Length: 155
Ligand SMILES: [Zn+2]
Image (cartoon, rainbow, N blue to C red; front, top):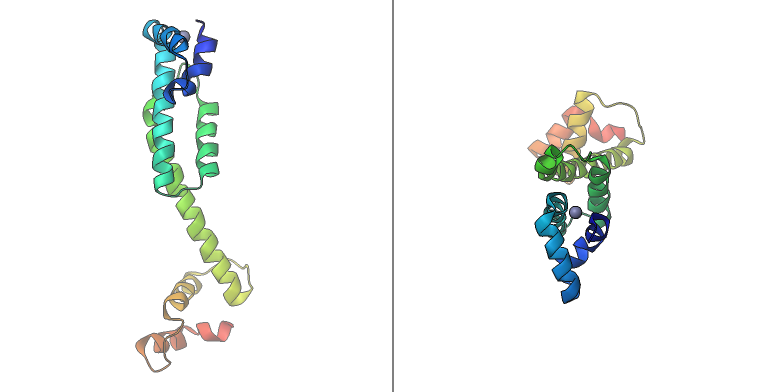
C-alpha cells in the first residue's frame, strides 16, 4: 500500500469502516511507515477533540475551520505543531468566547446609545453597570450609582 492510499483510509480505519482485508493492508503499512503512523495518531487526536468541542458546545463549523486552518498551516517538517495543537485549539475556543463577549458587549452598547464612538473608560463602566443594575429602583444604591454616572440620560 502506498502512503497516499493509506492516508485516504485513515478516517475510515478510525471509524472501523474498512474491510478486514483493507484493515490488514493498512495496519501493515502503519507498522512500517512512521509518517503515516504519525498521521494516524494526529487524526485520532483530532477526532477526540471534535468530541470534546461538541461537549463544550462550540459550533461544529467553527472547530472544523480552525482545525482545517491548522492543518493547512502545518509544514511537513514542522512536527512541533503536533505538540502545540491542543494549545492552539484551546486558544481558539477562548478566542471564540471572547468574540462572543465582545459582540454581546458592542451590540448592547448600540442599543443603549446608537453611537459607535470609541468607548472611554467611564462609558465602558457605565455600560457594564447598566446591564447589572438595569431594573434597580431609583432609591437603591444601584439606582444612585446610575444617577451618578448619568447613564440614564444617554437613552
Ligand atoms: Zn506511509
